[in-house]
Amino acid sequence: MSDTDGFEELVSSIEAEMDQALIERRGAAALMFVRIAGALYAEAIGAGVPHDLAKEMATDYWVKEMHPGSVTSEDGSDVE
Image (spheres, helix red, strand yellow):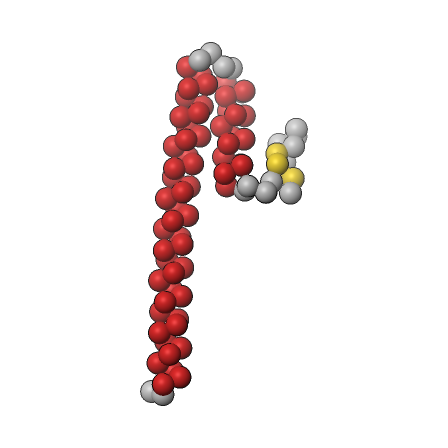
């Protein structure tokens, strides 16, 4: 094995570890967003907000967190 092969293997290993760490961070963030969206929905329902509006509020939060650059249009489709 040449020095170049060893270096490439090391870089590849570091990239794989970084990719795994990114996946784990994104997963943890998604779980947090789910919990917050669920809490938002539950609190809205508990405060007497109608189901459809509470669902829309939770959905708006979810979309804004998961896709910060997009906006949901009136028909429910995402607009960039």
